[in-house]
Image (cartoon, rainbow, N blue to C red; front, top):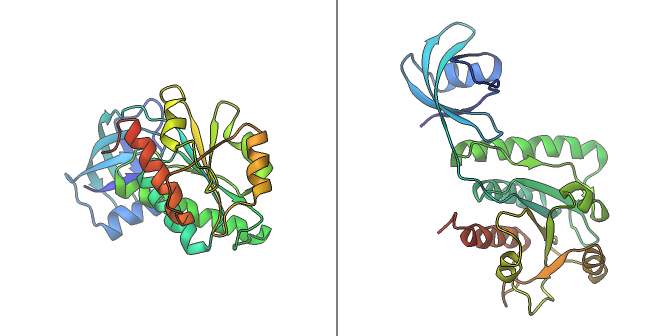
Length: 244
């Protein structure tokens, strides 16, 4: 099934005229024809069955059908200590597939990667395109937010006071992630804080705990940074009855 991300007014119209980049994608790349079925999603949680009614020289006209409703999900933010570029792209793609609502890159003491101000904007733009493409491919009606990189102390303001921050801490031995999740109200928002390749400095973990974060463990094995957030997302989705 062809899926395309488009802005859809509220309330949704019966027909949409698609121009510009999306027109090129539908008409020139996919070569859609009148009568062809597809799905339109708006990136904010709405998806619609649709069909092509006309293909003109500068626009594709779509007829919108019924909206697809989705089961409510817990909002999960991945707070990721910056890894190397290719690892961050992998994390964004797979976290999108696993239902992350937002991804927040952060600078940490042991991070191998460093984003200078002039490079950060271009990198975030690329990350957002990766998230959009992953959402299109996996069938999501929304696209996760890719937030601007921040320093560690700024994460609580970024995720909001209602969000419980869970720190994946290799030094934690007692409190399992599953126990911490079960202690929270159903569908209460969570954030997963994951260190970079070199792990957390103990002072960073102490600062997070002092600000209200909860240290948790995924088990005995030490996971790579690109594995940890995805494993944690999988656990939470399973506990919420939305995976497995």
